[in-house]
Image (cartoon, rainbow, N blue to C red; front, side, top):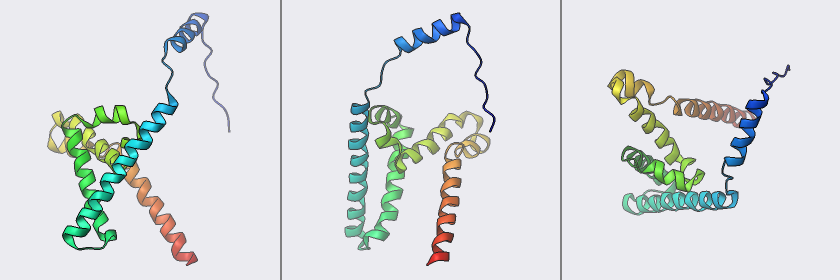
Length: 154
């Protein structure tokens, strides 16, 4: 594989790059990891509480109660995005809030909100899966491949 050569920077550009590196704030990795851990744990705790709630109220097994719990988490993430709260929470909580199913809901709703000016069909409906579409496609294809492997070897 042929490597692409990086363009050489002029001395003035190099000086600017060095100045940017000095002024750029250094991330606090430990703090960010702890916030992601605890916020992700809180999302899981809420999800488990919803599973338990649906198990008790609908009298269904926990595996079946996981479906409405997931839908509820998606609804909560969508509503928080629509009200402009999710991004503020995710900025503080980091990956713990953005990675689970709530982050998926945020990616769909934020894309829909961004293009709402273009109308319902050409804006919202056409653009809402811009980011999430790749995730859905990759997820479906991965599930198919692993399902096929499982079917062949079991």
